[in-house]
Image 1 (tube, rainbow, N blue to C red):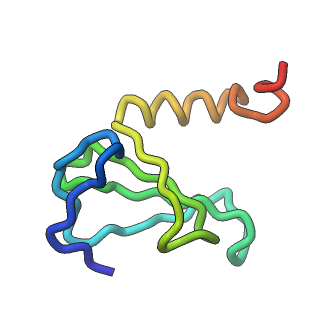
Image 2: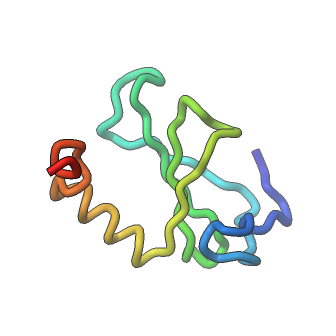
Length: 91
């Protein structure tokens, strides 16, 4: 679906940034088959400074987590280290 002329929504971290003409969502290679546990990622701004993550089961109208590039890198680092696992958060 093309998103011509759309701007990043308020509160998304980079208000007023131009969204790319076509947002292409990519499914994680680690997601299971079908639409069971799929996480998708996309670049949400033409300059590549805003990254979005969504649950494919809730697409296309579900919530999107948005990050600037530095915050996205920190998020991925924390996720890979296990710091965001439920058991790690509860401790």
